[in-house]
Length: 436
Image (tube, rainbow, N blue to C red; front, top):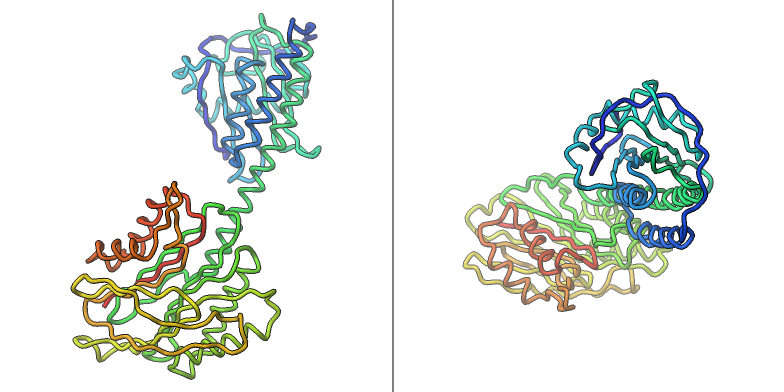
């Protein structure tokens, strides 16, 4: 089977099932209306919460076996990535028997049975015609219910109940209503999964897939999306060469999130590649970029940006001159070879916000053993559960504590930020480190 399959609990009876007969459900038991209303309310609460296909399928199966059936198989149809089967039983003590039904051939039997049973009509199983796994028992009442969303099938579920516990007429109606609610939840989870995957792919396209090797430097970078996850972020970084030895390093943050922010991030990166080759002055490049952004309709969006340039070679033992300019971006952190950390002042105004850009080129000499860290405000503004921001001071202390982690420094710092935020980033973060 190509579908993902899971089993949680099962019943341990023996004997093959076979043959079918239509079963006329008896009338409702006392207090059935109240019990069913409570179950539908519980189903609505539970199925509104998860945005995960597997979680939705499991909650559906477990709701069914809590009230309506001994066994419940839920199949979600779709692509190989989204198709899955889950199988639940009302007695969690019988988990060892469920392991027998984890085998693909047994789930295949159930799916084949599901395909031939009439929908929403209880059917009695007897004899050997269906070849059900022996663990399912020798006498069952089966009911197949479609999972639908806006009238479109998105899956189905099969309910198996011992013959001495037949379904009531209102149980059938309840199962149908549950199938409709579960189908809507499945479709919502599927759409959310598609959106997350699209966001992931588009976000990756805004960053260089692999950092180039820069002679004389260890370069590391990290991007982490905010926990919302469904919006493309505006943080970006790039490392590129415009001549035999001239390198450029850029890291920035676009105002806002979503498709418009992503489009501006892409425009900034591509523009830098086009307007930087004929100069060695990052301030001039930022002025040119400002003109480009103001010449287009960007709905008032702007970017902060830190841009560096240097020439590799000839500085193995001495300092490496780095020229940088800032478009309103947080000051980078310099960790000297002796372990001390300080911010590097580099003033400037936002790029794409005003006609006359105030920006200047600043020289920084990177000595052997020095590390320069560029970051977006998603790093320093990360909040712990009590609402306290990480801040520049804590970032400096974290940087001081990671001496010798040049190749993995960006990853180590990103993990520090995540720990501070208890894994819940409110904003995207980008980090890029340069170590002599």
